[in-house]
Length: 124
Image 1 (tube, rainbow, N blue to C red):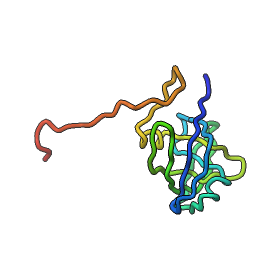
Image 2: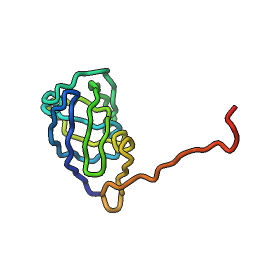
Image 3: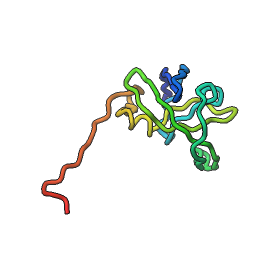
């Protein structure tokens, strides 16, 4: 099993930008920004969320949002506000927002096959 990193840029609401090297983590729900990054952007907590780690322990982290720019696309995304020792992770919610998926064979990000449901008759 390999690891995949991607270079990106994150932007706060006041247009400050920071370049970040993300570990693409298909097991992480949200993207995580290290403490020095989100502080440079001036992000503020919007809510606090409990997260389960791979070893089964639970941690609480503040969550905010920012604009993320990757070579394959850009958009707004929720982000975990990291604490000391936390590393930059690119999570599944951000990938889905940008219409991307991690190919497990090539370990590369690629466009997601997008689905759209259609009613055959008018909904009730």
